[in-house]
Amino acid sequence: MTDQASGSSSGAAVISEHEPPPLTQVEQRGIEYVPLNQRWGKPANLFWMWAGGVWNVEFVTYGALAVIVFGLSFAQAVLMIIIGNLFYLLTGLASVQGPRAGTTAFAISRAPFGPNGNRLPSFFNWVTQVGFEIEGIAFVVLAVIAIGDRFHLVSGTPAKIIFIIVAVLIQAVLPLLGHTAVLKVLRWLTLPFVALFVIMAILTTSKVNLHVPVHGASWGSMLIVLALVISAGGLGWTENANDYSRYLAPDTDRKRIVLAVALGGGIASMLLEVLGAAIGTGVPSATSVAGLTAGFPSWFIVPFLIVAIFQLFAINTIDLYSSGVTLQSLIPRLHRVSCVAIDTVVCGAFAAYAIFSGDFFSLLSAFLLFIIVWLGPWCAIYLVDCWLRKNRYDTASLLNERGRYYRSGGVHWPAIIAQVVGMVAAALWLNAYSVNANGSPTSLAYVGYFASRHGGVTLGPHNIVLSAGSDFSVFLGLIVGGVVYWLLAAKRVRAEGEASPSVGVADA
Image (tube, rainbow, N blue to C red; front, side, top):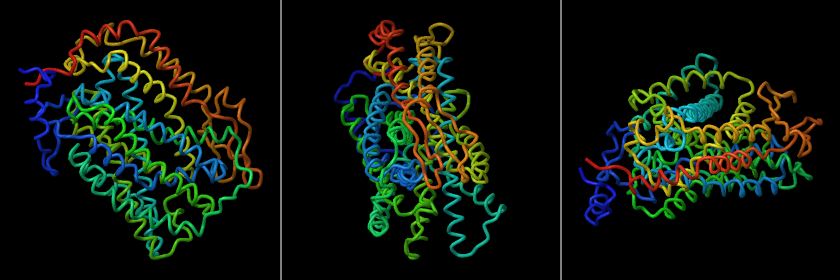
């Protein structure tokens, strides 16, 4: 066996000359270590993958939600969108561990949490990834229904069920093929996606009404939108990041990785959400895929919906691939391909519920806000742990579950305590208030203790309460989770880092 940490010029040559596997070859690797001679990735690959995945109609609807559902003025929405998308730096920072450790995000997460303690955030992440998949499939089916309605085709319950089954089967193809297919196909799709939205932006200019609403929303509503943008964007992708960066050489420049990921996701997300906010000022139905097309020329609508369907499959590819390897870290005996199959079935079942529910978009807003409760503390713990150990991981111990990270019964209690305390803090200032069509709160409406006491009320037409209170959950979760972990674990984690190999494990 030869030590991968040697960093010799010959080792670097092997990496740089290695070609990716064929596009149609099914990836068998799950959370297993990626050998040096299969590290074919480069930071540019990550830029185009994130741009291709994020350049998506979902992000247009997020921008529209800010204006239509939360009552922000266009200027307020743009400000929150710009600030919120700066958090793609978190996605970039959460991509630098994979090249060193050579494994996935929730295998690396065993370092701060321990192999058994890590099952808690792994479960949360699996639920989150499946939730995003359900969202994507629901959007796909609604787009197909919109096309059918355009041609006066029947789209009743049997048709919807068929659409759901076909959609989840198509969705499984790229994640089943694996990492190479995901990166290459998303890069190919970037340019046609950009072209479509350039046309859409041009057509939008005649519909924009930047002075509605005149007074805008309360600062509390602005913070709720900020939390939603951060959750759907930079923070919401941190748990996926290393699943793709692990195919980069361990000595890849970390600044290049951070910038490639942050710019690839952040630029696309920012532009699309601003476009959505602009559309929302003139198209009140723009909170759905079909609603976005209201008032657009007929020649544009069907091509738009067709491309939107491909886009939605693209973004679901990232979620389904990551949910599969997360499930494998939760239940190691499962093969990656089996994990994809399980996730596909679960996604299809819950997507059916979402589609047949009358509160789909209220459920969507609540989902994007509720995931902050666990994700903020986990992200902070993950990044603080990486900083304390100077990005040094013993990959053998990460993967065999009985090495240096096993500690006390496989649980690292400082991380568990920090996670729980951070979640409580985030929940106290979380605002997931949402209303249904008649203006009454939905069954999932929730406003934390501090959220309800600060931020004011935003009223919509007919004095319907669009939002009430404020939302600091993102910041509380990140700050409290990270600080508590640092206070409880700094000394021990630094010692572990110093005792770990500088890069990963030995290559066979």
